[in-house]
Figure (spheres, rainbow, N blue to C red):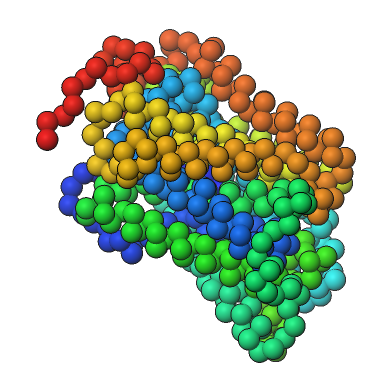
Length: 511
């Protein structure tokens, strides 16, 4: 999932005023927000065909998400993020489902990303055989995941200042630098004449569409690109957004795709397909590269760096989505218990409940046949829940073009209604394809019983969509707080006294 792997914290709304961001600055911000290394081994199994999947996901997901979110963020910049956007189109019930899914998918993401973090730390030792065995040990994994997660939670409870330094340096040391090293070493390895573990040739770029199972793991690429929508709030901080924002999106999209493609191929060059492991192959690649260049000790250094990067991301993520849910909850959509804020301004009760869910999900690493099986199931559940949110977002963007056509949009998807249908439609189709494929058990990974695998995914999706619907239906008048209601702007349809989905009768603004 994205550099903070999956859903990013809801940012503060930018204030309209003097432009403060250049095109390249915004592009780099997007790359930093999206790029992550932990999912590369899953796509390295596809060799050169991974290029096709990355490009497909960019065209049918990355670019549509970025452009559509920019229009939504500039037209409805009030607090609430995706809750606001979906709520404007379909009402607060579905807006609450969207924001709840954003919080839930990030919660489910924690065990998977922390598994990767602790596997990284396991590879600090000098003995590869011992390190590999330790990283695959279920008891070791679950204890480590819980210690690190609850440690990050207690830091977050101290407020933003306590976690800002960790997240900043963790991102630089644990993502950007290791990515550059991986790419340079991988292509230097190939340029020096060493044999590649994947077949090279133009004919290898096109996937074998007759093998349906080849598409299953590829669906996870969509979540690699998730999170670009959060930086759409900065479109108001860039000069001439209708011209410069698309430039920033183009630059960041190209950079993101290049990093993912080059990093994936670097792993595929050196690790045989039959030996690729979702949680270990990135570390094995670094270790083999450095051993080849006479610096085996650097493998341990990179393992620590990757661990630091994940910890930095987790520290931000522990607070981010929970803060967004708390803002919506205090407007009357969550019981008072979940609206509790501590003296540092942190939604403490939501964080505790989030931690209990993470603890429960982490136990799956002991119950399921292997760490890799649990990793795959939780990763796919994260994908499907996030994709449901994106499906709601794309539908809302199209719908709002017709129900609220006169709402000022500092940035608009080019091409009028037809352009919105093409761009958001591409995102809808791509997201729907990835959603369906996510339920097919991958043949490349042992996940135990295929029936149990599918049952867990279906049950998880149904459960986490039903929960917010039940909460919304059960809401009480006393859930609204004076402070929360005052701080949360009304929807456009509320101000006009109409129902959501009914076209606005407001006149178009004067030019």
